[in-house]
Image 1 (tube, rainbow, N blue to C red):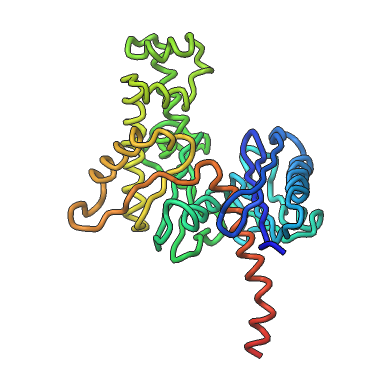
Image 2 (spheres, rainbow, N blue to C red; image 1 turned 135 degrees about the vertical axis):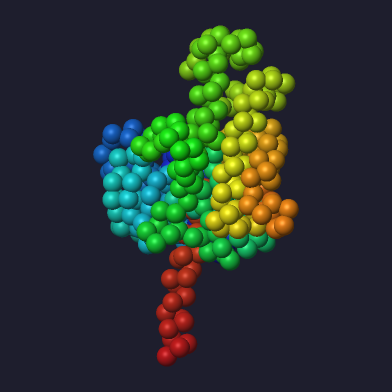
Length: 336
């Protein structure tokens, strides 16, 4: 019989992606469903997950599925059983692990998607061999995960890693969380698009190229389009990415002062800009780092696994947890 595989599920704002992941972090088969609307009853989302898992189990054939890992954007309890709050779904204190385990008959673990991603990057990606890793994911907002000596640090209540809501500008821009001056208002995909749209709407001469690319339709001005424009030499797009990168470096310096990691892994959609973003981020980090010039500094690297990091990490974390539970009776017998 072939080695057991695990199912990884990544729940995004638009789609529920699933994959069969082997012990080397390789995805052999994939399945997906559209993510139900946030107002939909939790059981509808649950059914969509079950459908993806069933598709993958059919594809697995003779391969043994040992565990199922769920990565979700939002607050997940420290015991990895309950989604306390998911901003893009209707989950509020949703006992997802129990519900899915009962329906699928296979061990299920739930985790924050950024926790899953940092685990995947440490196991199979850009942070292999590093003892202290911080991952920062730049998308609509900013999320992240922290791993120390091979263990994901979830915090006392399971809600660590919400780096995007550090205040970097007192009384700054209003954030969706209700506070002002949060880091993600200055260093996220939303911030990039907001600044570009402001200039296009004002018909700034500096935004002529971006204006032409979308024929003046602000809704078509997205992060990937701005990144592509920057790659093709548009000066404004490059300046906007540099500003986002500089703010990214400021926040990373704050995190370094608090946690002193060896490596920062930068993931999420905005990280596709590569050195157009990371170059200014490294410069901003070096300029703001406490004790600069007298201390070792963390390296800042791009994530290696792209959009698959959350899916791969969720599967591997679930497999690891299932194996640990299976080993408990044997360890108890050895100690008796």
